[in-house]
Amino acid sequence: MCTDPAGCSPARVTSARETGERLAAWLEELGLADYLAGAGLPTFERDLGGVVRWRDPATGEPLTADQLAELDRVLHAEGDDPTHAVPIALVQLRREARLRAHLLTTPAHTYEYLAGLRGASVNATRFAVHKAAERHQLLVIAHDGLTLVPGFQLDDEGELRPELGPVLEPLLAARMDPWKAWIWLTQPAGLLAGLVPQEAAADPAEADLVRHAAVRLAERVAANR
Image (cartoon, rainbow, N blue to C red):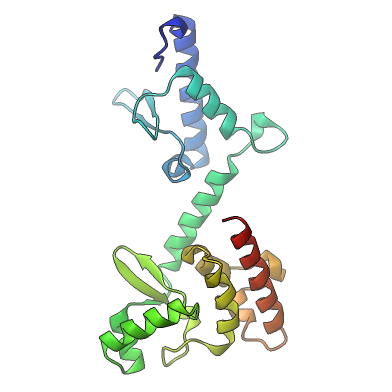
């Protein structure tokens, strides 16, 4: 764990080992250990004896004592009290992963299934989906080598619900991550005081508010690119 001979004193090695174990146990307790790689952070594994081994994501090499100290600082940087801080980025990744898993249990159509709904050929359906996505008029998700069209945005004939066109367009034009767009559209939204966007868009009394919220969100997405 210590690669600098000048800093490889037994006391420092012991301190680094204790830091690594403390961080690993803390992340395991929070249920965040599996999301380190997705955040571009060092990851760890336990050997057969339960000893924690931290690795640099870029090199795969063991973390040095200095790297572990920096990781400790980064993970505890959120909030006013570092002792009780929670790594918000990892919490958000965990939430998104859980929501993705949930969304995949809801209707999401392949080209073949959608072709059946539309009474069209698979090739024609594939072309139509591709063109609609290009025009920012259809949300399309890539998953496990498949192209999925989330069913919430479609009517009984497999066509885009007309009230969702003005909501989808700004989000997709801003190149919002499709998964995040799916999550926002189908979960209670802060910009809408807890309303679910895709549901509220069907209410004439709320439709303008939903479109406005989508435009504001799209502006945020574009500004953060």
